[in-house]
Image (cartoon, rainbow, N blue to C red; front, side, top):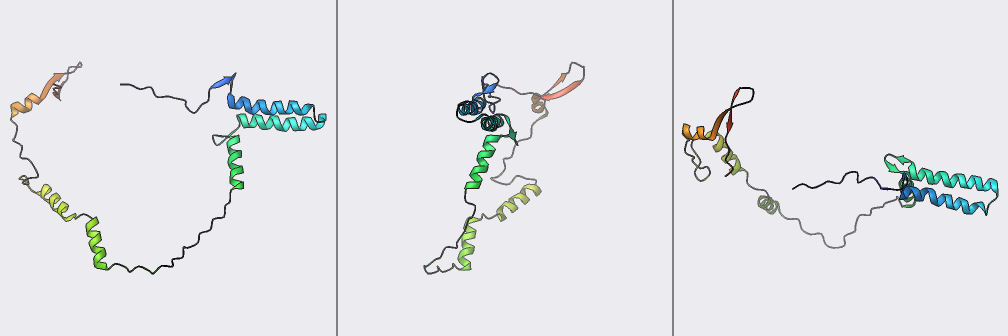
Amino acid sequence: MQFSVPQFIEFESRIVGPLTIRQFLFIAIPSLASFALFFVLVLPVWILVATILISTGVSFAFVKIAGRPLYKVVLYAFSYSWRPRLFLWKMPVVHEAAPTLPSVQHQRQQLKDIIPDFSKVGKLWQDLTTRKEPIPQREKNHPKKSITDIQEQYQVFRRITGEKEVARRIDYR
């Protein structure tokens, strides 16, 4: 069964011409605000304010810093500057009587309960690597196969180039 894996999931859809909806809003809102200010402010002040508003909107729409949009970088900068950065840690004061420490023997017994005994594993490994006969109840004694059994498992065939090759025959029945 094949599944289609979605690609390009990091990109927003282009909705308003070549712009995404977010880019369009970043440009449209300052433009509308500057249009409204045209009727309120004097011409030289309006030009200054409109230039600042529209350039900020265009930079928020298109500028990326380290792969992140500028509006997110500005948002992170404001959140960093407003968040407190002084962290104090006070050691908790315990007013209860100090508990008695367990004995060393008790601690060793607890460790023996937790940590498995690896001496048996080392002995088994040594037996497996040095013995020639099977270990009782650990290894099954497989009968040796005859040459006819081995020949049934492998097959000689010729490649297109003419060279002979031996490959294992696999039955999928």
